[in-house]
Image (cartoon, helix red, strand yellow):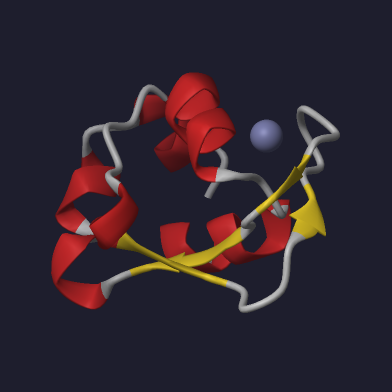
Amino acid sequence: MTRNERIHGLGYCRSCLNETYGLKLKREDVLVYDFMGQCMKCGKTRHIVHRVKKYKTWKLIGSRKLGKEC
Ligand SMILES: [Zn+2]
């Protein structure tokens, strides 16, 4: 499983992804669903990230936590 697939499966909002995995994803780094959804982490209604843009996936490499779980 790639890191991006992992993110897809998490259903987290961007701030939870950053907080949980020590990432620094900006709004323009990620693709979110068109509709608002409930974040699986904080439970708030937010834009849920479904993947990190292809040329931004290097930002995921720095996350050990995310890497370990792959
Ligand atoms: Zn959240």
